[in-house]
Image (cartoon, rainbow, N blue to C red; front, side, top):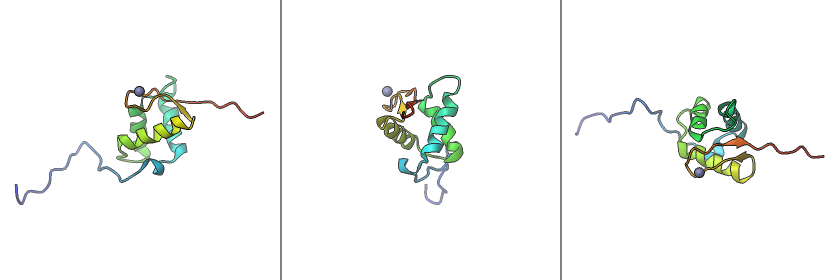
Length: 96
Ligand SMILES: [Zn+2]
């Protein structure tokens, strides 16, 4: 309807123009650690909720993309396909 202001969704934060590369790896891994504490694994949407404390409104797909990179490079274990993920930190053995 002409002249009406656009409706804003009050539930959702305005999406940020943030890319996976913009997410700090340490902040991301800290979020995984917090969510996985006591459970051993972290569902990715809980990681999204935790990350939004640091990156308000960060899109879910960006968090999934970051998780995919970290799983592929061996930093995280779990799955990035969009199932709950069950992300966990991979403990690398210390070099001898
Ligand atoms: Zn999966």
